[in-house]
Length: 278
Ligand code: ATR
Image (cartoon, rainbow, N blue to C red):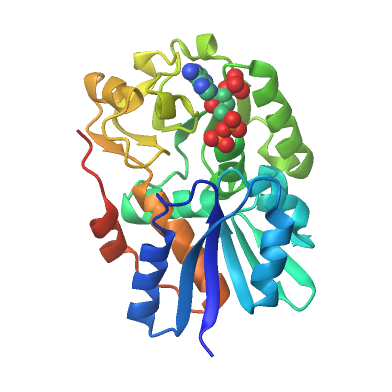
């Protein structure tokens, strides 16, 4: 029987996951069906129970259910624990094993696709919400010289740093929390915008001087074109700018590999779903 997978969210029409996993299944010759589920608000557990009862093997989870998925899981990876959010699950009898592949997908896109090693580099992450949290452990594994988390609400960045240092005391000194005003006079090789500001066309109050001209500016949001953040970087002379299309494809490939034991190449998917940065 064809194995069943799906992405659950609300809204869900926009999701590219069925297209992406369909392409992966084709090139890897995996017999799977991957559908979209519009989850009624407040009924996450009931909807997933029904999916499992009908033979569902695994799910991707998108807004607004990443926290519900966290609560639904019986086992969670360390990065899902730190992120406080789950974007992929697999079912094994009564077990619900949960993961968060957003951060590893992001690192894979930056290091492998965009050929920007983070080892020994100065890295800046704007934002301390769910998107930023998922990336911290995978970032630290890359051994940057410095990883700064800057957030409008400084206390949130500080709490996050404290939480990571409790788990990884060896990161002390290499991981720091800052407010936006502390960034004046600092420069970074890689700057990530993990705030939700771009979704409303806003710009986090980041000084244009943070960008190293030969560095990379990366917008985690996808398909928003040249966001205010990317425009700021471009105007500051940064030539290497990217949005989250590669992250989207790579987190999907991680989930696919986790479910199916074979990791698809992402180049064709990225080519297909990329939206120009204009
Ligand atoms: P997500 O899951 O997308 O990360 P979130 O958990 O709601 O969403 O977090 C949103 C992040 O974007 C937060 O870091 C938020 O800053 P605060 O913690 O100070 O609220 C940040 N953010 C949203 N709009 C912003 C803006 N206009 N300027 C700067 N930061 C902004």
